[in-house]
Structure formats: structure tokens, C-alpha cells
Amino acid sequence: MRAVSPLHDPKARKELADDLAWLWEEVRMALVALGKAREAMEVLEEEDRLLGVLYASLPREGHRVLRETLQEALRRLERAHVRAREVLEPAVREEG
Image (spheres, rainbow, N blue to C red):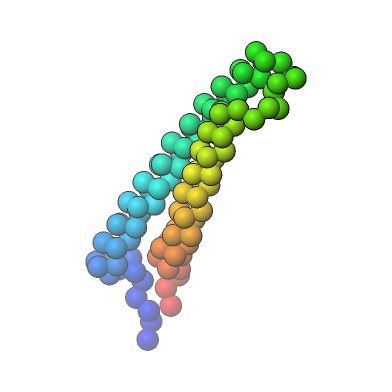
């Protein structure tokens, strides 16, 4: 007996649509976090230019903000990756 592709089952397609919506939002929020990280990096670079080499390596609030923002982006991308493999691999496998 051949296995039916999830793409042929209306219920499975509805679940896939819900999963895709979740993935879209998770990746979108990761991109938002990456945009914030890029802005934080630009601010730190400007501060470094203003403060000079002597102070550039001192921990500042901007370093903490950048680290936390990058951690958020990483967590979201890791969650999305795991979920994408769970959801998309069965949908794209070749039929029987």
C-alpha cells in the first residue's frame, strides 16, 4: 500500500498551513531581532570611534543589548529550524 502524501489530505494541508504561519512569524521576528542587532552594532561602532581605542573594549550597555538581541534571534532561528524540519520534510518526501 502506498502512503498518501500529506499534501493530498485536506486536514494535513490545514495543519501545514498553520505550521507555515507559525514559521513565517518566527522567522519574521528573528529578522526583526537581527535588524535591532545591526542597529546596536552601528551604535557601538560609532561609540568606539568617539571614545577611541582605549575605551572601545570596555563593557557598555550597548554590548549587553547587542548580546541579548543576538541571543533572541538565535533562539528564534533554532526553534524555526527544528520546526521546519519536522513540518516540511514529511510534506516534501517523494510518494511511495
